[in-house]
Image (tube, rainbow, N blue to C red; front, top):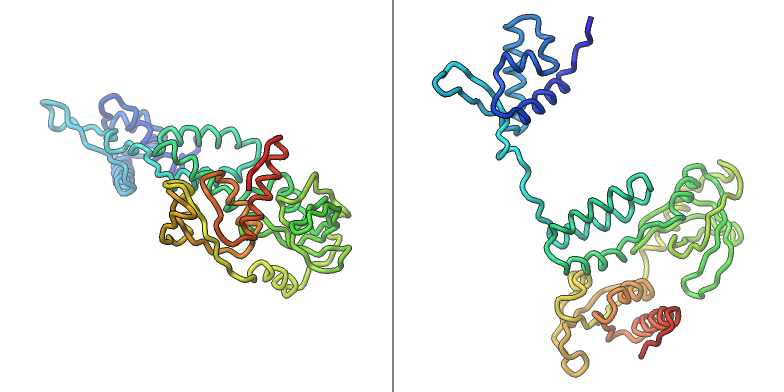
Length: 330
């Protein structure tokens, strides 16, 4: 005895048939050719089944229309109204396109990387304009992808497996190997953070994934350390919430650096210090984090205050220029 087709599959078959019919389909044609309706044991059972399915499709927003043959009022057929069923043209704003592009940064698996790249190419083709590219790049520093370190660290957190990696300290620039018991991966202040116990220091520490150099290597098997107490993890996470809030004064080129502009507060113009530029005040807690974001805008953003932020931006630009063989004026 043939297997009965599930109702959901029968509904899908009906939609496909009514969408692709060149004119219309009568009930007899539907019963004879659409998979699932042959399960009806009688004419009355088919009528109830089809009417129920037709109402269900209409409730779902699928425009099933009734078509009567010319000159034969009792010869009724059905089809899906293509004009009413078609999706409207995709019209993305710069902000929407930027959000999708940012989300795609986290699809690093090779099985979907090609598909996401193709989809973004098509979406950019119908985006607002080329200016949206800057908004995308402006968003990128807000949440950076975890890079090659993310997957092995995620596995190590889940397996409670000690790891070792080479790490470049933010403040001193010191590069050395760290042995860590990984507790948690969290997104904080612009990137992914590993929170765990530094074995050599015997205390909890936080590590930016963007500052890990080379491979993350296992240092022991699964369950190589005891899980931390909840208060230990909470204490380590609180270090990313504290810090004195400061204010930076930035000079922006008109219609540029929209992400910073949206976060900031407009200030009165200062023709003597920043002619032909818009001034904004932006709150921040970490000098080097804001500096890393500012340099991504190039000459679209100038730091007027405070001096330590300006100095850090210049340092980063000079480092980049030295790698490229150029120079940067202060």
